[in-house]
Length: 448
View 1: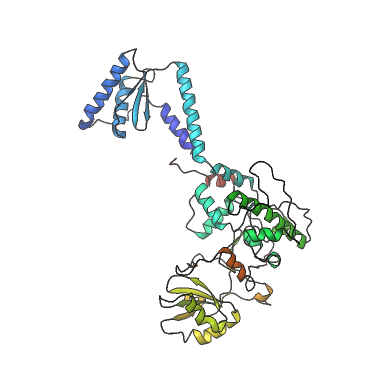
View 2: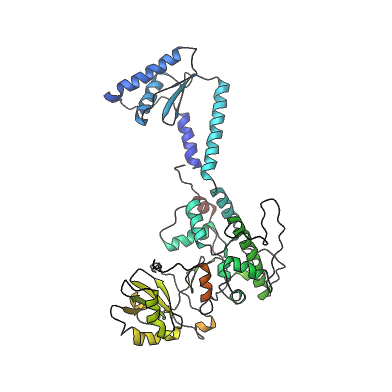
């Protein structure tokens, strides 16, 4: 945007210079152009009278014709012409001091307009360049909006999205994800933000004492949930408490330190984002996302009039299911008791009710009948989960409109049976983007 403004200023300086880019005036516009030029000539022929002349409104093409005719006869020393909201305004020649003052004011106005157009993206740019740890709670959607509004439109490719996000914010800490894996998930009964604040305010956690300053300061004694500033404040406070508790559990001396990108005890949680309603996966910004075993996931088609109760009733002999709707006739059903997957394949798959088909996840995706993921010794019961390269063609799960929305609190009820506890190898900090790469991400919209 700065480059475009500089180019516009250069074009403005060149106005009035002789050139060969004149356009021949069409016959139907000759009278309008001649009338405007005559009005200007008459205006300049008198030394007294109004200081400026406003011409009748015209379109851009006619204004160009008038400009070129005027500059054939006059120079910048004879008059000044400005266009305001599509209307040409002719002014008498100014003194040197007046010209300097007018140019100074114009530059100031342009700079002010530029700053206003860039707006809050300046703040995002500073955060990005600082390479500081960015902390949030269940923050995926927030990050998507920040990228789209202040950096550039979101990419169509999931892999490109991860690269863009990691370039803009090299270090991210999601407190929701922190609470979904061991050892914090054992000490946190609910990861809902307000519940989490109550949890870290008690033992074995220790809440950092913050002295509020100013009229608009926040404290943890106030309840201002869903007020942006308050939610940000308690998210930061919670992150500090979780970080220091994690440091103690790993026998790292913390002394109530603020978490940072280089904190060794945060290596397993930095740059991992919680996925709402996806109970066994997450987004890893530094490497491919982990692949999960889908032996207990079944693709089901059914009559359109079926509801959630019909699906849960069909699977009730096998311990119940978690239903993820695709559309009004299809859904993924994930068994709570994974050991029942064999019985479903033997009994329900070959003999589903009329109008219903039940197939394994792998069969629907043409991956065979068994999981391609090799189990480690000890299985998932020990928290060991193998990893995979992320599939960019994974279908998104859309909730059926007839089912009431599930509030955030509900995902905590799933935690007793399934967690996001994925041990990871020593984290490798990815190569940081160059300043040129980061600078390109903040090229503003030129339509300001």
